[in-house]
Length: 499
Image (cartoon, rainbow, N blue to C red; front, top):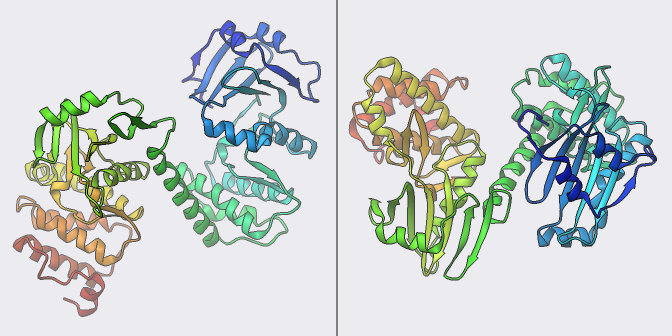
């Protein structure tokens, strides 16, 4: 946890917050006293804070402590803990089970609960482990991570959120686990569970860190234990499953109450919005009445906000709702879009509200205005890498023309999101997108620029020379005629016939 970005809380305020809680000490620390600890606390820092949980770091002359304070504020949390009461103390029990099994972990100190407060809350106090999170810099670090994962599996430990930040390396070189709420101790781990768990570890290493240079070292370290070996291809498949699960989970948060979004159910309108967006129904009505048209009458601007409207009809797709969902889906995939602010239904009209980009330019206008050769080359390379991210994350824009791409300060933003689909892309669909782009930009973007863009886009893929030449010819023809209807866009067919 990053202590540098934390804020301070007076100890007296924390003492008042904990008043009324019934405390239970751990068998490992039977003589511990919370009052004595608060008396010795030199500083109390807030590490994490939201509606459901606050994490405090208590600094004392002898050692530090982490206090997790949870509040059952949401009705679904209250029902969840009522039906499954063991979830409340799962981390507390897991820490004791690990220590009894001889597996190094954070030392539990105290737990507490206030049953009379509304909403109810509970807490967990653990001792700080001296050391730093495990760093993965070299192939040797990767191998050590694999060996540690194999040892945990041999002990029957299934940690669903195992990644380097949850592994602390002490100054003596000993490894200890933290954040073990989602941990299970099983008599044995079948191969399917081991592969799935390793996929989560590999996903955290590969997609959340820039230090993974030798994935073979990770799997080689894991396979040193006397158990059925795991292949790297199995690991990559499992990691992709975790990636898609992460994308899906984070995308759906825009349509439910969460730390960033909220559901709107008021008289006269309903929908979803960001918690930081403070518009009311009167503001929306005023925007619809006084907004300036941007793209026909269905896209308007008002006070640095862009509003897309759609008249709801039976058996018609709700384009505004699709834009709201796709905006979030692209955001979690790292694809830049104007920041979505809300989706609302008022009477029979649905509205998608997003930020209005200042000094924005359409892609064609932006590229055509660049006269310096080096500047244009950098812009084309950046655009090619931006488009490659679409293909890597299986995002397809059915109407991929320059009018649907905005540029601001050298950054690219996708708009008109109701035409976006998330699906596996064929080579023909990718080529159709390239043809749409080529046909929608002016001759100020020269053929040399277009071929250079294609070179940047395919960097690292190394398509055959005949295939590249066939695409180049199509790029040339489309650039001159500004149409794609008369051309066969199947890239495999172009290569086979050598046209």
